[in-house]
Length: 91
Image (cartoon, rainbow, N blue to C red; front, side, top):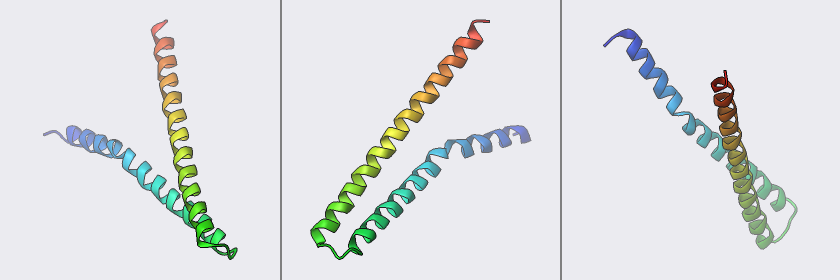
């Protein structure tokens, strides 16, 4: 196997695990933000029920935020690819 082929395979492997990096960073962000929310509510000396409600609301907010961001990102990328294809094809 040629050295160039091996290098291309390594680059493809690195590019294919981009989803893993996004998943780890997203999960980390969700855990930290929800934990901080729960700790902030708990510090206000409120009831256990209110702490639980705040935690669940934070999880739902985070999930909706991540889903909306991913939706916009995917559609923006698709629009960019489509525009590039249409522009390059019109020449």
